[in-house]
Amino acid sequence: MSKYCKEMQRITDTLSGIVKAINSVIKVDVTIIDSDFNRLAATGEYLGDVGCKVDASSVFSYAINLGQAFIIENPREHEACVKCNQKKGCQEFAQVCCPIEVGDEIVGVIGLIAFNTEMRKAILSNRENLLEFLKRMAELIAVKVVEESQRETLEMQSKELEVLLDSMENAVFSLDSDFTVRHANAKARDLLHLESGTKVQHILNFLSETELSQLFNEKQSIQGQMQIQNGDKSMRLLYQSQPVICDEQICEVVLTCTNIQTLLHTFHDVVGYGSIIGFSDIIGHNKDFLSTIEFARRAAMSVSTVLIQGESGTGKELFARSMHFESKRSAEPFIAVNCAAIPDNLLESELFGYEEGAFTGALKGGKIGKFEMASKGTIFLDEIGDMPIHLQVKLLRVLQENMVERIGGRAPVPIDVRIVAATNKDLESLVKEGAFREDLFYRLNVIPIRIPPLRERKDDLEFLTEVFIKKSSKMLEKTIVRADKDVMKAFEVYNWPGNVRELQNTVEFAVNMCESGVITCEDLPARFRELDPRNSRYDQKVIPIKDLEKEAIRYALDHFGRDKDGINKVVKSLGLSRATLYRKIKLYELEL
Image 1 (cartoon, rainbow, N blue to C red):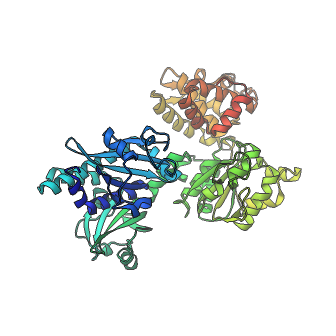
Image 2 (cartoon, rainbow, N blue to C red):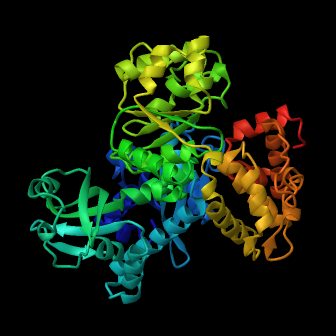
């Protein structure tokens, strides 16, 4: 037996609190064993095994011998799993092991275990920070072991714990049974204005007396939302409680709070659904355009279906995102689907999902569709005019019944989703041609929004050009002051088939080419240099949109590169999905 095993066993209450704290932050199951393979603390699946022996052939033995933290991405195949007697029956998706070291001796191991794909993603998506966090936790446990052994005041380590808690992005504080704050980290003090000794029921818009009482009546974690007032700003927070049990009674509750808006930013960055924006991010001074923005702002507060119509490059998705993030659904998902970018045979499963075994190649366990992913939020159906007729029928049913039916599913799934659709096509003409269902058109067109093309708001050209010059100059680390008068004359007579997106790309091209502080016609793409500013009337050449698009894509590929990072930048700069970009590259026979 290790000389520190007794000390480890004496601090099981502390270890239990630590595994619960780690679980509340990382959302995966946690366990701690000592060097004699006694399970001292756990959450989730292994909670019932606390106090039992762990098989000495397990990965914990490998961790103790290795003496270093490591991640197992593929259980049963990792070197640490080779000698494990439980390998065949193992249900784990991923695992992290971090040894606890006192001096030169390994006294135990902290283990994080993923039992599903979400937990696995939580582990693998933040490897370096996760390992560093566990090492910190292991150090703190080691301090507790030494403290138990020596019974001495360890001020430095206590300060380290305080610094660690203060460095957390979440607000963490504890309450006693009188609803008085016992401890609060820096985030809690800043976000909630909490200090030790504060009576939380005195804080406006916090939890109600009933909700606070419930925290001390449930011997399990409770999750919920609360509204708080911070200065002149109102915020919605997610909270999770963790009871601290003393003599079979709840003597203290630890609350972890997260700003929902912060979570949304993180979520949208990670899953790639784009930025959180509002109507203030849509720029322009044109009177009709401002009226369109104001109309969309009012429509945002409704739950009715919206149909946005406008040419390519006018900013239909910007309007859709603004409507979502300035609506009552802003705390819920915004899911965008480009109906033209997904092959017809895949679009149905993307939108509505499928059950396991629904077709050859279906994933084990099935897959939820975009409508279910957007639950309580907004789904944006871009290029709705390209949706096949047979899927239009199914979409109409979703609009009528507020239910989706997965491919191969036996029962419909109820949903609460707001639909915002968009198209650059004339749907009424498509209805007359029989290419779009009339009943679906009227279902979608409850609140119609038409975004004017750039040629109808040319009084915005100078303002937009200045904005894009500043943006491109900053991105390209160049100092470009303005565009000269001849450039603006060329812009005035040009028809802008690609609208604001084409203007932005044109300005970026010019900033790249400009060798002085002022953009001239020589810095513009060839189609603009053919417009002679010396004549009182420009003889404008009409260039097919496909040629403009091909030139824009070729330039973007040449500028940003064709590697993975370059493609990401091309997609972002052109406002295309990755699937659409690859399809266009193939269509125009461009080099990749």
